[in-house]
Length: 311
Image 1 (tube, one colour):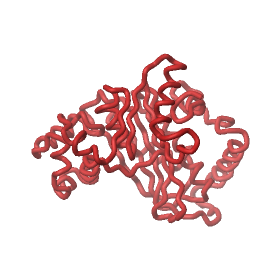
Image 2 (tube, helix red, strand yellow):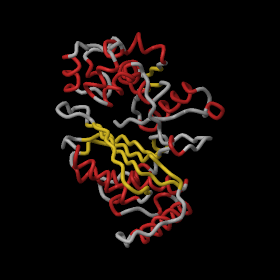
Image 3 (cartoon, helix red, strand yellow):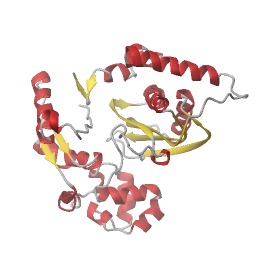
Image 4 (spheres, one colour):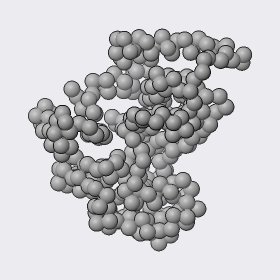
């Protein structure tokens, strides 16, 4: 069965405390489908996932705080049992004398960064339960463009086994990200693509790569083409289970500039805003790209979900 991340911040006044809400979701799943489910709760996506994998799948329900990290996470061994660490990465860490998550948390950050680059930084902070990624996009009262980004992460319904299948979902995600940037009046120069393989994959590592372009954009197809380039460059060919798209390094739009070398730019600009207007008025699925009607598309099925579950 698939997994879903739910941000319950601010829901207490409507449905009770977060544990009550989570257990109500479990009850609703069982009542409708007669399927037992497991819940992991935490202060961020990472800790919630770790709570689920390490404890919740055995007990049915687990809620972790940062105080639980030393007692519950640090003892985990082998390292590949921790979300985000494959067997290949585990072997590299073992060669450095790191066998438990506690060893990773107490390793020198500088050595991890020297060995693994930005991934070493992420491994270190994840060992402490620190994860700054968000579900969707948080509203900010200080819309500082330097700190602003638009992104979407999606756990796929099943393993996507080839480039063509992945590109279908990738285009849908780029459409969603670009639309939200256009709604806020922003364009972006840095485009990032993340891909996590199926948990059965051990020979290749997950990746998260970025590319910065010369001119800011919120054009769906330009964002998609950059993501496609990143996929072609870094995709290891194994079944994928999670995708993420993010645009950052943003700036406010100030009018629309024609491009002498891209005569179709103006047409795409007006077409995108026409499509946005139709969707805003009649619903997100009132106008979809053809790929969404193929067997690999997810936009239609996900439009029927609330917080990852059927209405």
